[in-house]
Image 1 (tube, rainbow, N blue to C red):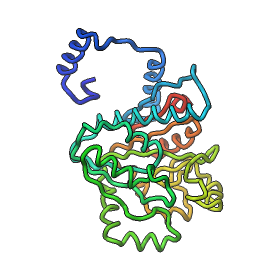
Image 2: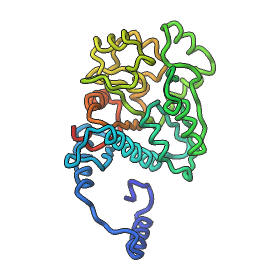
Image 3: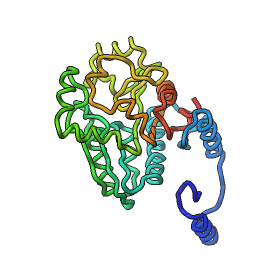
Image 4: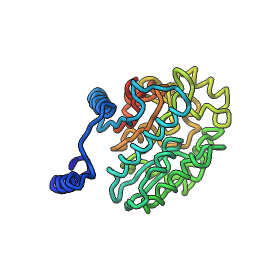
Length: 294
């Protein structure tokens, strides 16, 4: 516990003793949590990860495919993500953020009393017609406010009509200054989208990508997306025209981030998560039990 929370062993011992005496806590590890702990150890060892957190709740003995269960899994993962981030974040960290509903849910669980002299930066531009609450600008602004930190935001859309437009925009001072920070990011917080075996990524909606663009991604055997970069089954970026039309951190830069925290829920994301693991795009994996087991 001392190592995880980065406090002294004496402090942990004193607080636990006092809590037991006051009958605030008792030590009981129930079956679902034991299963989660065992699964965490297996995944951490198999994929050589820095850490794995399995959100307890829906286990193999308590499985439901309902929409309500899926939303519950997402919230449990988001809660664990908030707890993990608040444990590891330190003053002067630079934290990169991607868009998405799971990251949005995670921010809802942050403790506003915890302050950190931290910088938050968007790792890509905004998506046209994106739900405002999920937009990366909104997420970075909320996180900076929660931790009383600073924010740096790409004031541009992420998907452009042409590669030439992207090249031109990258020369703009306000954009280049933010993108220069990508090489300095200490921690990344991101979700992950799935394109295989079923296309469930929100990016596949017509108001983000056209049907022709989605068909093109299928032809290139895209498995998933991370930071708006489309992955093949080995976790490498697929060579599509969207690659040059996207204003986002490159996968080469993303891989170099010291701590990459991926939040994911739903067993349909198993192939996408596996691709990201193979590609070296995940250091800390936070998932629900069903996805971890898959």
